[in-house]
Image (cartoon, rainbow, N blue to C red):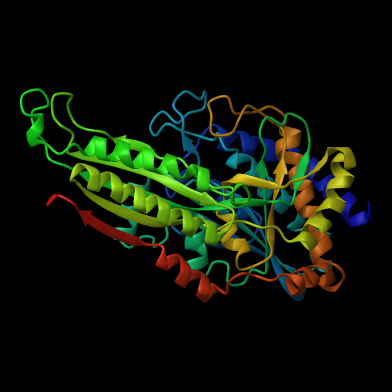
Length: 442
């Protein structure tokens, strides 16, 4: 370990209590996406005390701070997500919103803050060829879609998730490489998972409209929208044997409204689902099958169906050259035996939108027990969840931006982005789609 990395380790150890206290505070005060106002203020306060140039708010609650190296060069973004998920049974559930940090976003936000403590106002600044952007990003969890649609209608946002909206407004225009950590599933010790990819997805809502009638006295006069939705779900399930294993397709519909009263034929039913896949083409192919199924259900019962599509996340991939740099530092922190080469994860992240236009990756970290997105999720090892990831991010920044930023430039030059920013926005805009199919005449 060279002198600069030893210096980083020592600085983070000196700030250990501040880092852990921040992580625990955020953990105990979760907020939902695009409403992380308390979290935003906490992050902004730290950045201002570090004398960083701060941009706030971005995408309603995002915070961006720029740490300038002495010399010109590429810009590395170290990111942290801010939002939680509804889980009223978690011990730290927000009593007003039921939000809880059951996906560990507090941990990645803390790792970002820890890296800032290590790098800012240090002797390292004199050696950096390039800049480091620290960015707290809102609304990674793709939930509460109706609320976000209202924000969109009110022109407060256009895209329904944090990083896509930040890309749109130009917050990443000066960024060349992006890094973020994320907790794994029930990894109680210090461990890093590197590389890999994730599914992308398209978000769908379907509204089945039937005709109400007395369910006991005159069901023949009704059009049962719930049965239409049931037929659609069964049709989707019938397609599953056609899903190719290597496409990692996931379609998981839920009914968010299934009628009003038991003695009334249901005339309004709402269905919501994601269409996930490893590639954009596989997502679009599966989406056609799902649309056929939704229309089939409505047709079978003589109902109307309104299909409302919104862009979710693009498939995420990792820069192998960036992962190589991270691996060397991970080995110094946890040893080779505690590094895992990740393959493909069937969940999704809006880091996929970033890696479609620039090199980046997600670093999986430990220190938790229980499965994410459940009430059993808990931070159990603060060193593993907060401190070691802080060191890994800061040490990687040093490797990328020292020595004339040769390693960063090599990563940028060797990476083949799928899209330019303009192509990305054109693609995302094309995913907003609303179609109606009326079969009442049958």
